[in-house]
Length: 440
Image 1 (cartoon, rainbow, N blue to C red):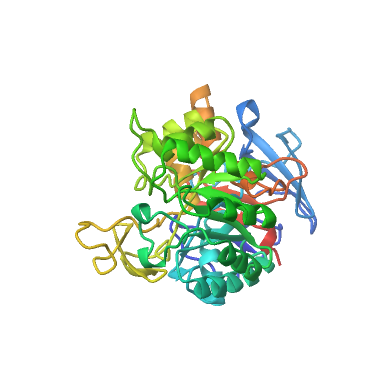
Image 2: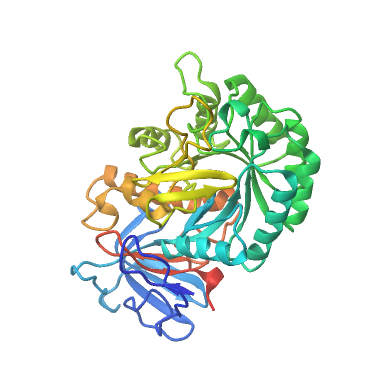
């Protein structure tokens, strides 16, 4: 399914069909039913000199990329946008942590609502995403896992992320404290079975009881252990990493720096331990790089420390793509004001003052444009600094999160990869999306 949007904050365009050229709403191409050629500025998802082609060509055949190369004199002239500038092409984005959008919530909505939430983010360039649950009672989690498994069977989503209930009560954030529990291998097994092989990631606080037992379940089902919502010390975090490595489990960090103690120069805690592990290629660190959850300088520090092991995530809630107002996240009431989602007064702990952040309202493309610099979509890349900045941001939204999930067929524009492609105009508007999982 091809989604074409003309407004940066556009809603989903329903029932949109593939264009005659095969994708991207009329991108400049020589095409037939199986082959397409697009010319423009190309960010590949690689790093270094291979990261960017100023005047490039992407050739696609039967849903896969045939080649990515410099344009030749014999190639079609690049199509330009309404401002007379060439389009920018980049890999479809991959979101590891997403609770919903367009007014619907993955933890509680039915099939139709979850489809709408996924379609919103797909229209914004996210072609692969996990649907994230929040802490709840066991039967509710098992039931919703079965709902989401149907969407994963259909490739509407790439799988399920269980965020809670195995979290620290001191760092539960917007999660319901009453729904938290020690790590429970029996419950996790039940959720994994209901997920029918689609449970891909579980957030666990390193200090919870029975941590190692749950890691063994993750190893059995091929699930990523994501450390977070934790008050753990650096030593506890390192011990948890060692356990995961012993069982051969991939490890990520759930929204690094959020829902964990502030890193202190004499007490680095879980945040410092995870950042060090990311810099040593042991962990991929999620960052909610929306300017609300983290200061931009914090994002820059993490990218500099671990450029190939940072993944931007939306942590989006139902309010993503919607106006300010009242929404729900699991059983909690959420109030969105100027695009910032917080627990409402009714759902906040007594005496907590301003409610804690309750997820995000951005899509990955918003974070990409925030951190890549203006050179991403316009102007010539004339310095190593601008090339590096753009390449790191693109990689954090594409290749790195795809690798976390073991999806080595996407996240890069290169020969042999799946043709998940996003087209941006020179203002950063999403001008088209090709998502092979939804192509009809």
